[in-house]
Image (cartoon, rainbow, N blue to C red; front, side, top):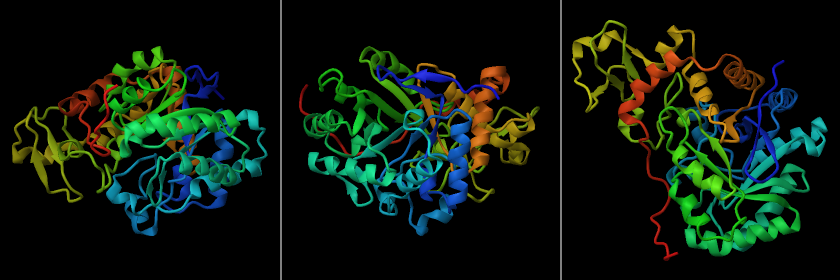
Length: 388
């Protein structure tokens, strides 16, 4: 079996597997997961060289969303409107049970969890995050976590994060309950705001999502800055929360319509047009501002996913491989809840390291996505920061 590449995470001394195990699906976020399936997935991941597992206290859905989200197999974060459907802390519990049952030596795996975002909302106070780590450790059945992230900080006051939360997390680090501290969120500006205002070394890691993939690679511009700060980089959602999958994004996806709509490309020999799917109903289309849509050509269009299939490839696989190509990113988190998903993600990584990415297909996919390249969506509350 080919060896899964490991990469250094900033100044932590950790060498993470380039593919990380996103454990949110273990919390039944995207459908029911039996204990046997969860245990088999974690076991295979460890046996195959995956040594990094990421979880969160906010990682399970109520039945009201399971049906609609069951087809997704990667981590995602949703708007406050949908946050009310989240409940429980099952991901941490299931992951902890699996690691305990497998009796894996503690030095052989790296675990990160989060604080600040819970089923009842956001609370970045020192008191709450201090209590949170003890709750997480109990569920994980661990004496410490390797990384404790402050979760989706754009939903709180960034000045509170700087002046109250990060100092509280530093005390947790000093206590030995967390070895390193991180921050997560969608808007990239939150990272520079915090890192420019906290003492050097206060934040060891950032976890960014949906900003290093085929459709959005804006994180690359921030990498030199993060390296200068000695901060390690983890990315998540290489499939852009469902945009780069066979079935497309879920209905609740927060992306603008023009990004969610980009689902169709012409067949070879067809006129140069772009047809886009805007709903679950296959007979509804809109015109992209970069192209003119001739209704008579709609029937000649293929979905982007089907186009990849015709080439013997999978859109999700090439999307993951793209995210894995940048070695300045220590690991790419992918949600997994079955041995099959572990095998597929490992195969994509091994194929990339041995054969490289399919450059021709990648260029075709990039050309389709070019009109909406780096298009993102708002996340968090409007910040009214104090001057630096």
